[in-house]
Image 1 (tube, rainbow, N blue to C red):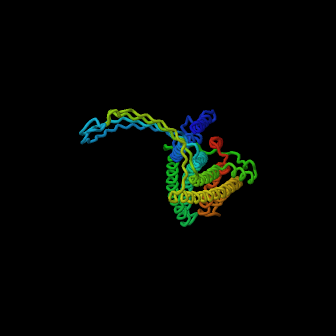
Image 2: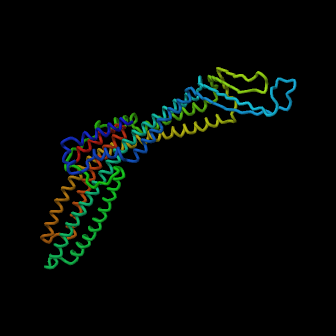
Image 3: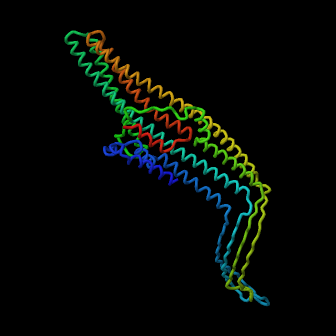
Length: 451
């Protein structure tokens, strides 16, 4: 896993060191690959998943340990006092309180020869680790998409503030022009009032846009671990490409085979099946090798001539046949069967969601491409309409409200066009994520669409 993360960070460094991005670095502007490197290092959601993964990896050692030799050493120091009242005509050598100190140790070894339940638990652990591996890889993919979404939300909020500022400035100029034309009797007072109302609305919109931008910067800081207000914007123009392959069935086939969330659910179901086998196997006999080496050394005895050291060694093959345990094994088996059925339902849910997400993402990419083209044309049309309306206002054929309406149409078209281009990039990443093919290189490639 560490090698995987190091590879991610190294790949991010490669793109940052290229000449094409030297200007961004010099101006302290954060591009996407730099943000990605910081996110892989500091994002707390990913770090939590990494620690969970590390914890799960240790479970194999625990399962394997039960199949390995269990060696124990016990040492005892024992003092016994015996009260002797009569010692005539016996082998007892003393009367009164007779102390005897005994030093002893026991070295024992227990080795499982056959335990079907433990073997099944080891297999279950391997499948649990496989599910955890899929989950951590899915978390890394999710971070790329989360960062892209947040990054472009910041750019979108910057656009919103820029357009709000431009709209306020344009409406302010229109207000001043309306006042002057009213003073010379060219327009009615209603035009001035409408312009003033529009200007006041634009001031409120500017404040709201500033708040939205601040909130988006905070959201980005949560992922990066630091606050930044200077990120690289989108390029003015770039080519929008259809998904390759341009066949939705190919993408769904890839998703059913490679989607990481689906893989994790499949492994979890298989692990639940092994848990059922392990619990049921507790009905089976077990076979163990048990070896003991004992030594005892008393420092005296109440009998004449009996203070001797003893040593014993035994090796036993022990067969244990479970007959009845109060219903524990049967109850555990029924419990694990229910959990297996739950895992099956979650696996089917993951399969359906994978298909849904892949199809939606594919359609989102294709529709966004068409949307970007349409919005680009709408922007050109709205700009032409605004110029014509402004000319009509100059000669008295259009009102101030007409001019303000067309101005808003232009700014709205600019905002929607920019948002659609952001959505195209996000949808492309989401499609690859759903298909299970998203890599850190896809995240780094976002830099190609930036200035």
